[in-house]
Every structure is written in C-alpha cells, then in structure tokens.
Length: 322
Ligand code: ASN
Ligand code: ZN
Image (cartoon, rainbow, N blue to C red; front, side, top):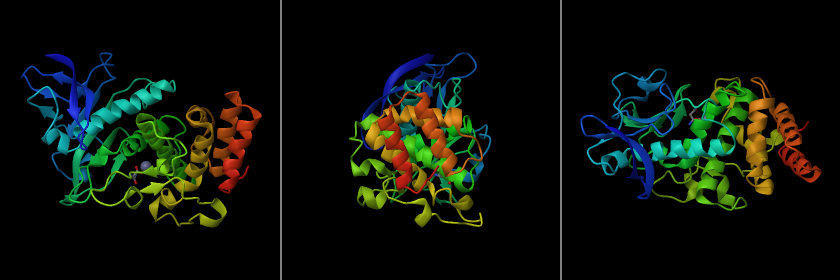
C-alpha cells in the first residue's frame, strides 16, 4: 500500500508518466500523493461511469469511484474513458503554473479533482467544465474523443479554477468573456509548451482541435484565438439569455489580443497575463480594464518600451482601447 510512479496510455496511444496509488486490496488507483501534505494537495481522477452530468454539478456524489486498475500501468478501459489524459493533464497544468510561481489552482496547493466519463440524457456529453471545485469531462462518443484528451481543454477548465481564486471575473458579459478568453489563452499556452509548438504557428491558436475523430483541426476546433475579431465590429450584444451575455461569443476579442502578445513576446507573456489576472483585474472589469491590467502588470514586470508598445498595439488591433 502506498504511492507509486507508473505509466498510463493516453486516448491517442502515448505512454505518459503518472503517479498512482496502490491500495490495501492490491488494486491501483489514479490518486497522486506526490504533493500531499496530510490534508490537501492530492490529484485524484474519478469515473462517472456514464452517469448524467447533472449529478456532478456541485458536490461530488460520495459513491463516485476513483478510477482503478488491476495492473500498475493504466491502459485499456481506463484509457478509453479519458482517465489517464485527465490525470496526466492535471499534473501538466500544475507544473505549468508552478513554473510561473503559482502553487495550484487555489495558489496554496489544494487538491485537484477530475471526473471523467460523464454523459448527458443518455447521450455523449461533448463538453467539459469547472464546477467551482473540480473538473468534469464528457466521455466523448462515435464522433468525439473524451474531452479530457485535449490538453488545451484541460488547461482551459483548470484555468477557470485559477480565475476563480484570483480576479474572480464574473461569468457574464465582458468580464465573463475575459474569464473565457483567459481560460483559452492559458489552455493553448499550456498545450503549446507541452508540445513545443512554434508560437507563430497559425494552428497554435485553435482550441480543442484534436477532439473530433474525423475532420481537420480547423473543422474540429471549438474556437480560434486568431479569428481576428474586433470589439467594435464583432461584439455580440445580448440580453443575457444567450451564453451568459456572450461569454464564449465574445471571448476571442480579448483572447485574440492576448494571443497576439504571446506570438510576439513568447512565453514571457504568460507571466504578465497571470500577474494581471492575480494582481490587477477585479470581478466586474470590462475589456478596457483588462487592457490596463495587462499593461500595468507588464510595467511592473519591467518590460521595456518596445514590449509595452507591442501590448498596446495588440489591444488596439482588437478594438480594445484604453
Ligand atoms: N466548456 C465550457 C467552458 O468551460 C462550459 C461552460 O460553458 N461553462 O467554458
Ligand atoms: Zn470556459
């Protein structure tokens, strides 16, 4: 009984290192105790066993089993439901934020829980979300792989956790579109870092582009941070009934500016955006407040005049003015 460093097979067939736990009954479960401090800090992945998504919003049902295997390596059925991807991905996201100086989603080494293999009304659930405490992923189906199989999606959902514990941008209108845009920015940054993508690669801005079983990355993508949307021309007004007043419809206006900055400054941009999020943005900020937050963080990070101009121009290009 105790922790064990092992490997698992991802949905796409890659062998990846994961941390698991050998139980008293001799089976192995997806519980990573590497950073466990006696009360918190573990990474755990649960199997919804195809139960309905509605059961997993809010507190985790007590009878939800942790993904377990008879063998120390995780393959086969545990792979198919996206459990290895979610577990490995959570650790990738943890390590990414650690490199930026942040200790987990809550900034104090809290546990990170994922639920995979969720369905919706008896059908595949082709979505994923952060519910305020944990990540929940649809299991995919004939047309889509498990939502946990895309590291940018995992990074997106987990970043909602970071946002909640920092600026806590209200999930409505422009503050909500910034919440979404920042989740997309870090989701893509995390995936790009892990895969060593060229920041200037136009496909690096696609979110969820690997999720469909057939079709090109561009057809498959949920969003494209390089879609070129501009606030004045493309902002979708809403009474609030649709998409929480456009949180996904308008997100690429803001994330497009952030992604332009990353294309120019590289991974240096990540630290600035995280600093803006954690020290300068506040819950009801609009796009202009977001611009000022990023520039303030950049000044405080001692970026030079050229870089500051690059940042200002990126927001200008998306119609986000001071
Ligand atoms: N996948 C979506 C998101 O995280 C789910 C939602 O609409 N909240 O943005
Ligand atoms: Zn989101």
